[in-house]
Image 1 (cartoon, rainbow, N blue to C red):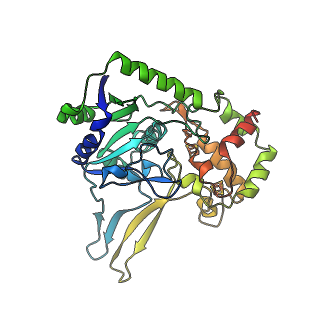
Image 2: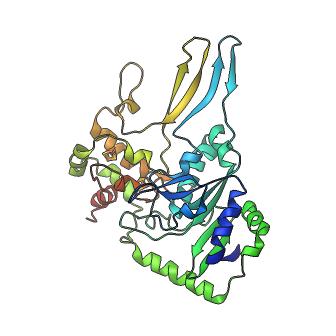
Image 3: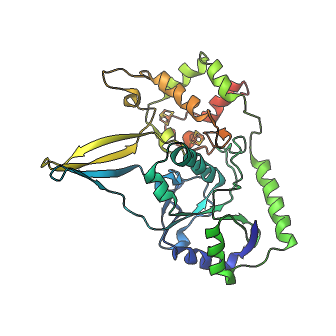
Length: 339
Ligand code: SF4
Ligand code: SF4
């Protein structure tokens, strides 16, 4: 792998260089406590110190709603409605979100190829940045606290700049095009990165091995936790909509009022909604809130064979953004007998 150093005083210039590759999306502050990825015009608004964004960056590859195609009744034809976003850059992705995106790749590219997702994925340049855990993070338990693939460039903060790992051909092109911004790394830079990595590891609150979890979730189907916690749930769907690996969607045909055509749209769905399991004839595969609540825990903790990790990358969003304070990690630990 190629390593370079970006001194702090060159950071702004580097971000402006990135804007030359297409629309730049990055984490910005959206309220006193919350952050989200937004299109960035002024690079000084980018927040390097954010903990997590409300929505994960999957929204740029698998949008909350999109038109799949239009249909024209008069000519009896389907019209491709894909809008090419052009090359775009997502700056500041944390390791858990980079790995979350690779989990989506395993479903939308490797397993059942999805043209819409794949076309956008090919346009996105990913610039990762390392982070420090807060009380919601458990990405270390989910093997998602360090990204070894899935990015073009990855930045590790040093005391006076960033150590950059170059992860792709595009990453090489970017740094070659502005090589005057970078320096060769020195022995002290490696020492600082090593120290910071150790400090990060020491900040996590939990270190258990959760390999048995997916089996315990099946075996503990009658655990009293399910009734107690699902009672608090209001089926708002925040936990799934904010999750970097959730990928359920619904599809609807929307006719034009003049009857001459229409469009097929797809939009994010949530297994926490009652309609999610409802099929023709009125049968519902998950009719009760209890069923739906359990389903999310079992789905997120199933094993993604391509990635050899679970479908949960431990980002903490489902706990932070649950309006009724349901603590997903604590619940999993209770099932494991840890709490
Ligand atoms: S289940 Fe919760 S903690 Fe796990 S990846 Fe999804 S939002 Fe993050
Ligand atoms: S965010 Fe909380 S209240 Fe909303 S559906 Fe998820 S668990 Fe239920």
